[in-house]
Length: 223
Image 1: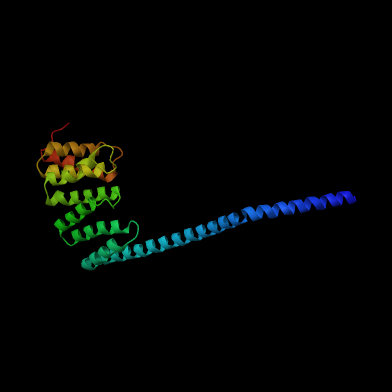
Image 2 (image 1 turned 45 degrees about the vertical axis):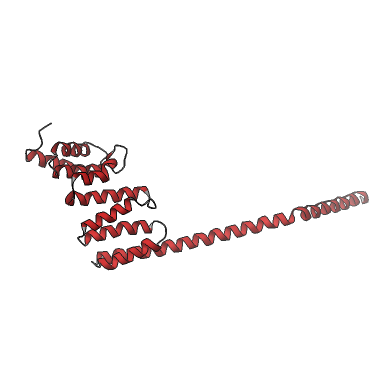
């Protein structure tokens, strides 16, 4: 029994010495890793909090600008949107730029609105879907105030079968063609929307309405 007790004591001493040797060798590395994990976690939490705060502040400014526009305070809204475009965080500068173009249209300045949408459509800092939306918005304005070529220059590429905005692009092209007296082109584009099962229902309805109108005016033959 005494021998067993002595052997256990020796083993415990050996294990203790081995543990001390391991700690002397790897202890600083273990502590360094632990500190790095803690600091990394703290930095991530701080960054997440900072970005959330910045995004929230920009969101509040954007909503305030929308309220000004809805109240008819267009000049004040434009000033607020211009500031947000310059100082906002995340997607808000791009949204501010597009909204400012809409406010210009609300003021009755179609030319300035088109110019603003065109500027947004050429800004590579803005996500591609929003740039395409800017082209589309400019085209809708130009249906009334521009030529067919003005509209086509902005949205003809968006009317391709693979483009998610093709239905709206085709509608603007069709309306511009109809206004320009290019009835066959207009009918073809309206029919594409009318016959497309995945087109939004309101666009399909408008396409069918326009086709009926063209038939009633004698500018579209049956079939």
